Length: 187
View 1 (cartoon, rainbow, N blue to C red):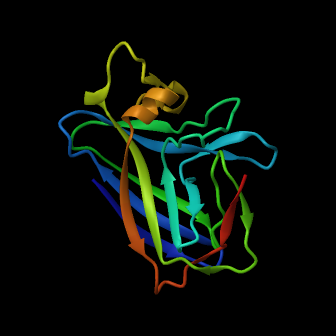
View 2: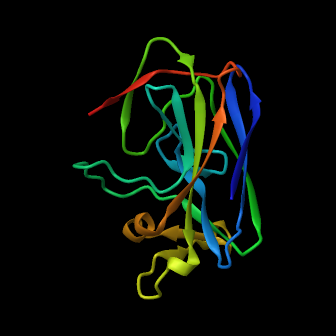
């Protein structure tokens, strides 16, 4: 179960609070850490970073999940979030912070920013989850990521996409004053 609320909206940033509770009878693995490019070009992991994907209908998708590589695109290596294991009944609270106005952030797509910010109508928060009951021992879907702690795992790209479900929660921001830059995809 995913619940989301607006924590703060300032002139500089949006902050969203979320909580995931494992209501299943088996462990679940929750996408919890996403790579963020640093100023020097290196990738770092930040617990408040999420992908930000605006659409021209006023929806802003914000999430931590394994994203599919667009059809026809070739990449040297896939970007995969770190998943955190939650036992039945456990909860995970997190925060997502992104600039105001929002700037698109997607590991595989480029965007061309529009000239004038306009109000987002809604924010859809997406969190990727893999259930332990779907895993098969011979597939090595998840491998430990000890650098981040004993409860963190990295997913195989193909199996991760196959088994990941995406939890969604929507926030209506029509009257919040939230704005984001309009974008169009660039091939």
